[in-house]
Length: 346
Image 1: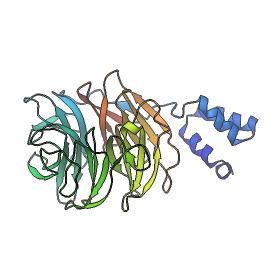
Image 2: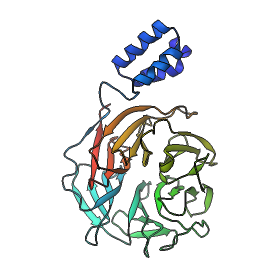
Image 3: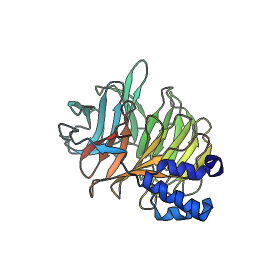
Image 4: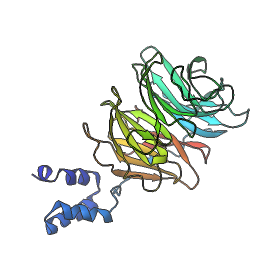
């Protein structure tokens, strides 16, 4: 009966600890209305829980990094973690670790300034995709590599910033997400000319795009990270607008946005847990990772923070990835020049 009468309240109670739930239920009994209870929620953070959802793996990695760690991607099939880093000419742009923290290899093929990284596993092969925001002869491009660093192909016009899509031109492309089908989603706009989300076919034909700078519906101000959920929704961390926007992956239709969770800083990264239960979001300017309740199927509804991981001052978490096998979160931290691993407790 309660679930039918107070569906929103029941969803909130499910995400809270026992003590907070008791307070809400007492308020419901005395006030006799959900409206009164929901007004009381303003005094209790929705993310307060009796137990944290994640804990730091203090032993990862076993060998430290040598540059500024901007991005991280997990190869779930082979148990590897790829990290893109920046530094002087002696700093390799890509380093590879095992999920246990052992260093395996490094490579530095035709990359100036890695920004985003993504690992695609298909039945036939594994490939590593990197967005390059450099301004030299290799920059403004997205590159596909073999796991050992052999360059396979380049999307974009190397060394040339632009706003065209035919031929493809980018200006500081932030991140890429590639589906097993080969369809490609790119957020192009880490402070350059463009503020757009582009979907491409496997042979780089444009299927749809949203490309207008602004704060209105389907507009962006530094679209910084992109992911696709299991029910066909594309999620974009619209960083400077302090929100996450959602789109239907086939048509590009705008589905809604979340902004109520971002009152102190915008989202710089967005990923989903393997069970699609939580959305993992990094906040670079407040040194925090938020764990949001993933939206239900068929609806965006309200943004709810279930837990937070507060990092040390000036750590600056930039981009994250989540292991589909273990559920571990890997956080690339520019300020700390490290990647930290957090393992799930739920």
